[in-house]
Image (cartoon, rainbow, N blue to C red; front, side, top):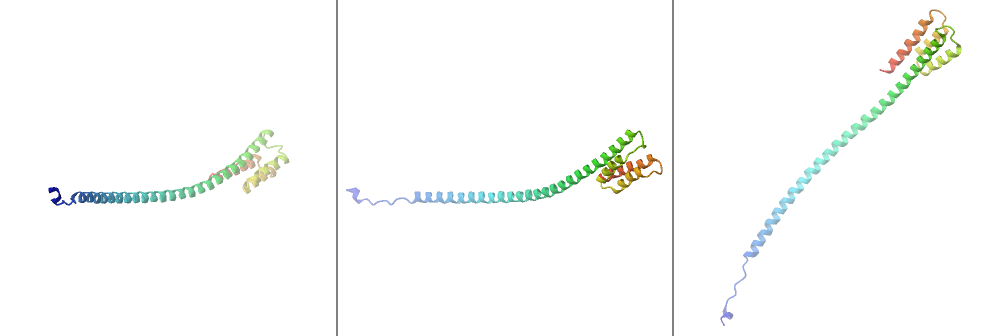
Length: 161
């Protein structure tokens, strides 16, 4: 009967305290780790936002440069087309002079073709030189046609500036 007279021993709170302490420690470590990860991710996000802003600014600068270069290319092509007109007139006059073996016997039709080619350049000095070379009968024809050639050279050089 001794078993009935024994005083029950209360359960130990030590196990609960240890478990509670471990859970609190795990919570604190986890909170610290998650806080660290959160702030690191914010730094990464801020860095990427700065990078995106820099890239966007550079992209806008490149768009501006591209538009400027496109305009330069159009202008360059226009100048090349103008040079081609001068070269065409030069070749035509050369062919006419070779055909006639000099400056004698030039025809009105040849003059009109040369004048039309000179008008296409929109160069008034060249047009005047062509008119003078064909129509002015005073002076040496070679000197008159040399002025045409000089006007062609000046016109081509004017396109390379």
